[in-house]
Length: 307
Image 1: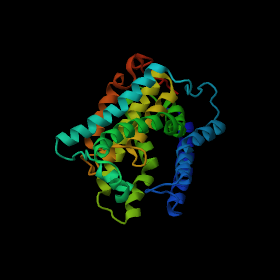
Image 2 (image 1 turned 180 degrees about the horizontal axis):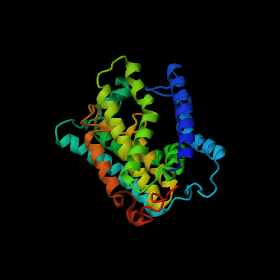
Image 3 (image 1 turned 60 degrees about the horizontal axis):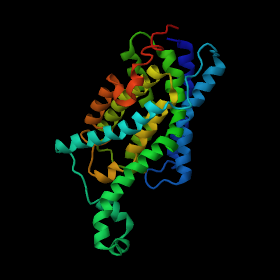
Image 4 (image 1 turned 30 degrees about the vertical axis):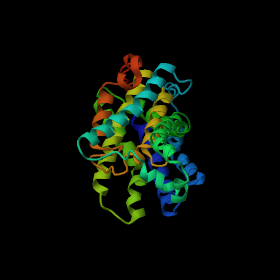
């Protein structure tokens, strides 16, 4: 492990990251409901702080012998696998929660339709209204995938340049499980303030403990998945694509699943549920599920380096 560079990276990323996050939160500039373009851009800035941490660490402790992994162009095969597999994992997650009785689908999308207003809904012919929910479901999921693979992935690249592009190779040693656990836990602790502030925002702290535990659990297993993608392909861009797809399927402003399953609550239903954590843990253990043949690539190429 490259202790000096790891320390510099973490000190900058956590110091600046927490300062910016808490500054935005206390200033009321993080909108949990109906965010504006300005609010969204501020969150994109936050997501790029890890990349600034990598830049700062590389300036303080130059390391020309270990360049950043590839970012672009994306290899078509693994990218297409990810675009298909990530939404499929979300579908399986919600299906398991449904089959176990923890959540039920709202096929009529009444929560979403209610946002259109009663007058608007009344003007829609009955035959069109019957077709609208399934049509909106297909379009909503497709749109979330499109946004995840483009706009959100570009925002997620800042996170991956830092955590997977810079930190991962310098933490890596022979014990991959320890590396996955450490990077995932650090990553989860870094963005946890944005998650937990939701309870302060609503002045309702019920559920804060399962939310914190599930969030950290998901950060560890999702981080392991992103680590494996980079270690096996040498490509940070693919990790950014995977994270972009995950975020677009999870967040209420982009995702369609919360409209289809509006009653989902942790720990047994939702994007970070127990079922989701188990599924993404399997994906980390068997990366071919996400990236196909590319999973046979440079296994451990970076993770066995001694620094």
